[in-house]
Image (cartoon, rainbow, N blue to C red):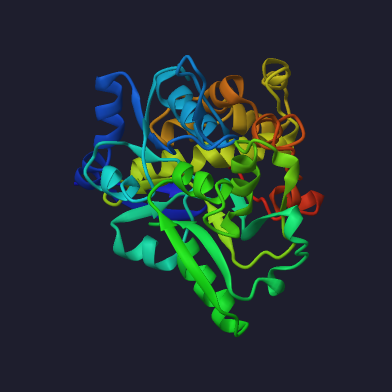
Length: 338
């Protein structure tokens, strides 16, 4: 059986059986009453627990925003800490509903793991952390260096590409977890610690004397980080994708945690669509009309989450850079809600 819709002047036929089959993840989460979200084992700014087990971070906010959109409660999230090695298996097996864990979007991961990346929460790049006492000012001065790196990440191949491409010798010392890697670096087992630059800032905070260490200026790779879902459920893919897009669009439109209720009263056509007072865009996702309001009330817009967790309002103090909105000099951009 088919139902025919007219969307923006186009006739779209939807096979009802396929549409129903694609709604399993949403149905399962609603029946369970909570979202299962895969996160890191503790990366400040992105996903880390405090001493009471309360999780915070940019990746954590994405999960709370999804829970707010789906369950109307950002606290209904079970956070599952995962190593780089185990993160994809947990998603593939159904242990988690979404992986929001500083994970780089690459072609091989997108095509060989049975997963879909839903967008980019953070545009990153790989770099190097080194002791100031070594008086090294550039990664091009690292010939014959020993380098601590975490296994199961894109970092190993990037190091090989950089050093071989610049005809430099190097030694890799690999470890299973981020904590093991940074501890090995601090104890002097290697000259350099390499990872995504955002992670270098986060891990540097764990060192006894963070000010004694510096991130070198070179960025040797593209590392677009974002959440993933399993193949086979397009509705769930759309919900996770548009949750992130809603946060980005909210910042662009000036919608914040403080003013969301007032903005929802607007008569502007664009805002009426966003807040569900005109049309049924939320319902097309399988959500309620006020889905964007729920998201922004829970975690704020993208800029608020960025500043609070990794930006100017955080201990990391990372500049927005590429993660600034497209109309403010960055490349962060979301399709419109219409």
